[in-house]
Each structure stands twice: as C-alpha cells, then as structure tokens.
Image 1 (cartoon, protein in one colour):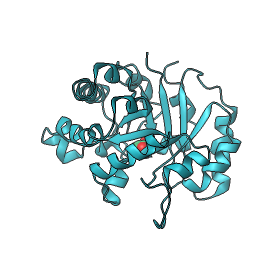
Image 2: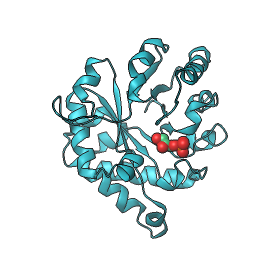
Image 3: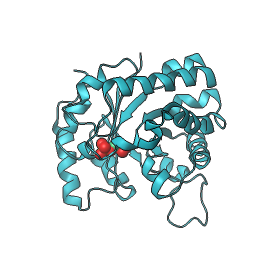
Image 4: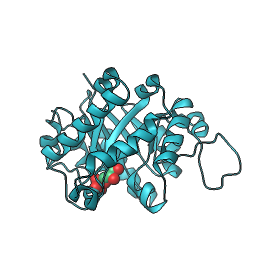
Length: 249
Ligand code: 13P
C-alpha cells in the first residue's frame, strides 16, 4: 500500500513573513491525518526557519535545485546544500520551471539524478498543455517527460521519487481534472513505469495529482485507485489545506 502524500507548493508566496506565520500556525494546531505524508515547499529563503518551526509531522521541500554540488552558478542552490541544511525533499520539473524558465526534460532528469545521488527525495512534475490534450497527445507527452528520467536513473533510485501529474491547463486556473481524467492519466503513468522500469517500481511509486485541488474536489479525486495524493498550489496557503491533507478520512 502506498502512503497517501500531500504536498503544498507555496510557489513565490507569501511575500511577507507575517503571512507565512499564519499558514504555519493553522497547520501546527490542526488535527492532521497521521497516515498522510505531508510536505510543504516554501520559497528557499524560508526553508530553514520553517523546518525549525513546523511540527515534526511536516517535512519541508525546496521548489528547485541545480545539479552541481558547488561552484560559480549564481542564483542556484545545490542538492548538497539542501541536504546540509536538513531539507529532505525537492520539487523538480514543475511546469512553471519548464515553461517560464525553459527547463527541458533532459535538464530536469539531470537534476533529478543529482538530487537522488545527494540523498534528497524528489517530487517530479509532469503534465500536458491544453493543446496537447485536445490533440490526444497527453500520454505521449507525459511519457516523453518521464522517459528522460528513466534514461538516467537506476531502478533503486525510484524509491526516492514521487511523481506529480499536473496538467498545465489545470494549474492555477480553477479547472480541476475530473477524477476520471486524473485516474486515466495516473494509470497510464503506472503502466509506463511497469514497462519502462519494473512492475515493482510501478506498484510502489506514489503518483499524486496537482492542478486546482481544493477542499471541495479533493475527496472524490482521492478515491481513485491510482491517485496517491496531491500537490497543492493556491489552496496550500489557506486553512482548507488541512481538509486536503485529511481527504481520505
Ligand atoms: P494550483 O493548486 O494553484 O492550481 O497549483 C498547482 C501546482 O502547480 C502545484 O505544484
């Protein structure tokens, strides 16, 4: 059985430290399902203070990292530095990084390998755009994004990977995938993993859904057999994030 996983991707929010305290105090005092693995990903500036102030049930994640350990790479943070700071997770390949910062699947794969080598766990994001979905290319696009990672990982590396299926058209739009759309995409990913890596990796890897997840739609999505949790953007900054963590209750 795969442990239910809920991540909060704060993106480039909040913009004041006071706002951050209020989100954290809600989480710190809430009644949280102890069977859910919970990870919050604040901007890198807040990683260490957050790690030191959140309850032990909450883990923290970076939103990105580079693939080198150190050196002349202005503006970047390395996997080794995250490990040194006691940060267990990193999000890689988010669609905002692929689109706005031109990250290719090969670059995402290279960073995924480096992060895993450094002992970080990786939330690896994949997903298709609306034109790609409308032309029937969803499975092909997602498989291409995953194949780049399959090409550089060993089978044993996959224990450190959570796959986030985030259709680009659902991110920040209020247009959540239907539970049937999510289930179909997640099952396609699992079938791909079985063939491209191994049946055991397919069975054990969490595949979580992201894109306009809210307290109102999380319950139905969470009943789908291949939906193992969520990566939440906007709603992770609000008290309703607690309801999403508790979706399976
Ligand atoms: P929203 O939940 O705001 O749609 O964002 C999803 C996301 O990108 C999580 O990584």
